[in-house]
Image (cartoon, rainbow, N blue to C red; front, side, top):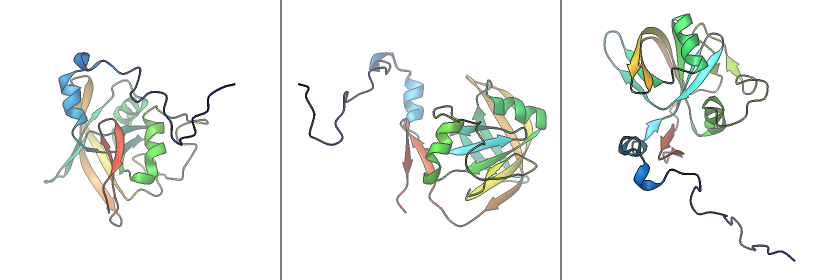
Length: 177
């Protein structure tokens, strides 16, 4: 005979058994984890894409966009080769898409095989994205373990007001509407 837990939602562990012990965790990484960040999808012609949660928009003449990108990603190589890319703001319905482009969720048939896409000269954009920007790559430089990507916003499309998908303490969150 075996034991069956009658309580729904039972857990084997209350914590991640593979997590780095508290005393060995990087203080900078822990600090970053406490900063809520918008979840965006960066795509380039090729196509290639990457989920990025370190995106900043700076208004000015011209408007600029900054982000920290994995230098070993297919997106980084495609954006440098093309000299341009698109940045889409993701919302709560895009959790699985965000995980897929972050390499955390399987993508049978390739990253762009699922979902509906709008093809642009800057890279594919999710057809249901509430906002996206067409960007011209201006420069890249090493910044910590990432590449700091600096770009000029050539055009921005902003639809109806929507709730953004946020990344906070290793999980997706959303603002109450």
